Image (cartoon, rainbow, N blue to C red; front, side, top):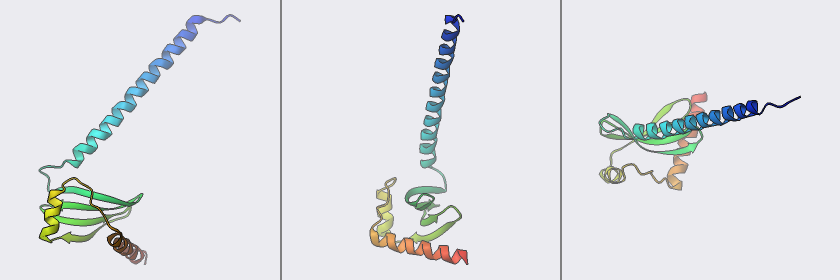
Length: 127
């Protein structure tokens, strides 16, 4: 059986081109995800803006949003979205305006209160 060198060269060229195409595709998808995510985060001129969020679990988080100038804290889970409260104190509003785009630091006591509230709402929803 005689091996044909032209066949192996063609196979190597095909594999190399496939690798190049896949690398370009992965790069384009990565860039699209990155730039579309940044574009969605900068929502100037929109009535609803997500200012910050904090992940509690893989599919649960709390978020600080601005709805037509009113700051609200919402809980987001796989099954629903719940309004946890509104920010009305002038000091808190000033702090939010000063730290636009920064993540909110959540201390342990607030975190414990929030988690117990989420658990309570979850058990109420199961009934």
